Amino acid sequence: MIWFDIQVLERNLRNGLVSDKEIFNYLLGNLVLYSIFPLLGSDDSSVFSIILFQVFVTIVITVIGSKKAFDVNESGDNKDFFKRFLALSFVTGIRLFIFCLLIAIPAGITLGILGINPNASPYSEGLFDLILMVATGIFYYYMLINSFRRVSQGEKNSPVAIP
Picture 1 (cartoon, rainbow, N blue to C red):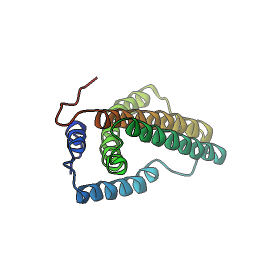
Picture 2: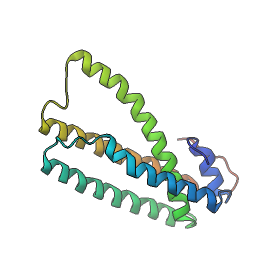
Picture 3: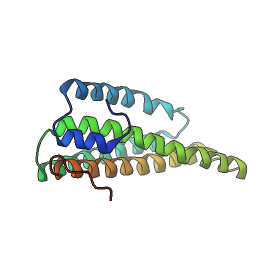
Picture 4: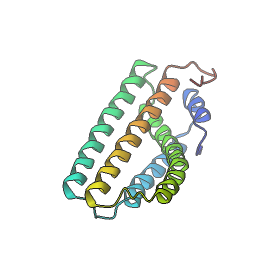
């Protein structure tokens, strides 16, 4: 199971080298991540209307992003969408999580030094969470759709180009 190297995963998917057992492991990984990540950032102090708006925006981003990934796969070789989706979304999620940590740690330290608290009130906390959620959601699907494009429109055994 590949945890971080998206290029190797893309090449293996394109060349049919990923087994059903490996795909099942990616499914389990996705289910665990989907169960844990929402709990990490919640503390129930945000305004209820902002939380509802966050849920709505999350659903919209998920539906549009998933549909675009499906369309890209269909316009390519139209093979193994679910296999690719589960595997690529797992690695994309891990990569995005690491990327966000690398940004969040220095940003948090900087905000602390400057005395800025984005969670000073329930309204500002909800708005801050909404902005982060929208930005990471859009970036996640951008990364995922590009991976789909490289897998479904590439040729067997050809290297994956890095844009």
